[in-house]
Image (tube, rainbow, N blue to C red):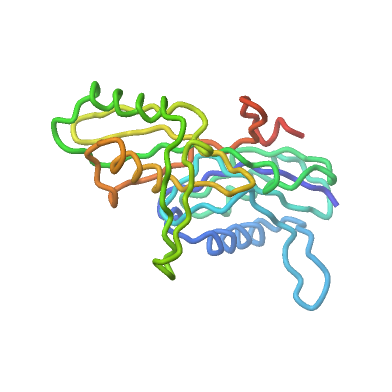
Length: 236
């Protein structure tokens, strides 16, 4: 078997698919492209296909990764062309690379994601005020977020946002639009969602944003070791 790693883009209407529906759409693309994909054995065989991580509904991705196992080694260029010829709008295969079958799984490698968050901010809120608020967040040693269980409001878990947002936040205002760049680290304790970081900045740092009006775009996903972010291709 040949293990091929692909970088893909998820955009447009596809951002509103759940992860399971997106995975199903990718499987249809592979079938239509007539690739020699490998299947598991047993009574319910499935494609040997895996993703780096699950994207939330409504989140676009400039670069997502997936691994597939092929029964024969095809030129990467041919795989990219065949898949793109059969892809729906919003799905693009950007490139690929064969990796060792013993290489760590993508889900074990992808531990750092960078997002661009965009949403409305109160008119008149300028860049000077924003930079002061972001500096206060960046200087804080601890920023706590109360995560309430959607099934039981009595169950509350405290998350220290600073354990996951390990690089300084940056951003700007443009009229009544706020744009932030946020990196989120996955640890053994889990991670925090972009929406939760957005909410924290409004409630605890005084940025007059609308907590329910935010669009997220994942602009990169990496393996973070120490302070260095590595491409999921580079870590092989």
